[in-house]
Image 1 (spheres, rainbow, N blue to C red):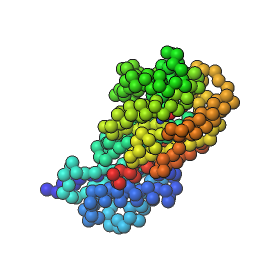
Image 2 (image 1 turned 30 degrees about the vertical axis):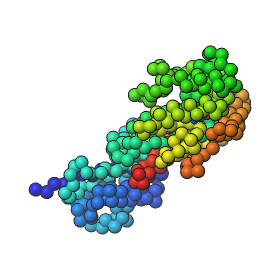
Image 3 (image 1 turned 120 degrees about the horizontal axis):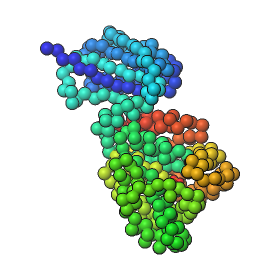
Image 4 (image 1 turned 180 degrees about the horizontal axis):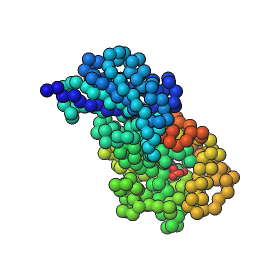
Length: 346
Ligand code: DC
């Protein structure tokens, strides 16, 4: 008896335009066919669906352009579903082939990797480390958290560790220019990640207490001490030792995870970053003035990028992404694209 297997895949395209849809679909089809070593004569049928925001006609054209001239093709338009991915193309290949179920590779590319974290998480991506660096307000934490969630990886906000040390030092009256006393305190801190990727200090989840204007104003000085950084970096590397983590910070690509296969450096205009920080502070109930926040951001940038130890700078192999005019979901998709393409190199 013949056994027909179904191989699935999905991807996203940049916009509802013929060339974008053709390019994304061809990449997907070639990956499904290549990764499963399928010959055209083994394909019984290919079915495409497209989300309502893109034309359902082009995926079939893409299959013909891939040289699949004899395979029956079906194309359908999906109905609108709240929360569904945007600009998404799905494919199902019915294949007449001896392929054990466990060997079938379903392929999810670009923004569609978020649809199947279980699949991307079982391959080379399960242990991938991703470094996301950049100045304050560039969108690092939102982007890093979302990327981690979509890929089923852990997430660590490394700035929170410097903030926690700063907060404790302010509470205990430790002199912030005294690197020796700060290091002694840093060494004692027991950081961990709970199952929701929340950073804990001595078993307690760290909250808004580390995000006050007082901590904001003092944290650059605390994090500029070489001896302090050495200790905190070691603790960060311990948390990353088992792999499968997205870290955001300033020196992740250059110092903490130098071997990370994906390194992103987010940048954005200082005024735009100040506006974002202002919204964050207001949401926490702090009243602050935009000009003051701009000034603080510029000062902090200058301090962070001119300090002697691990200054804020992109790693030579980092991809720089400007988020000034880019909505956050697009930034996330761009990074998922970068990660998805990496999985074939690992
Ligand atoms: O990302 P954030 O604003 O929470 O970071 C707080 C401070 O900590 C920032 O001024 C620079 C410092 N920091 C650092 O030096 N290295 C890191 N990896 C993360 C943060």
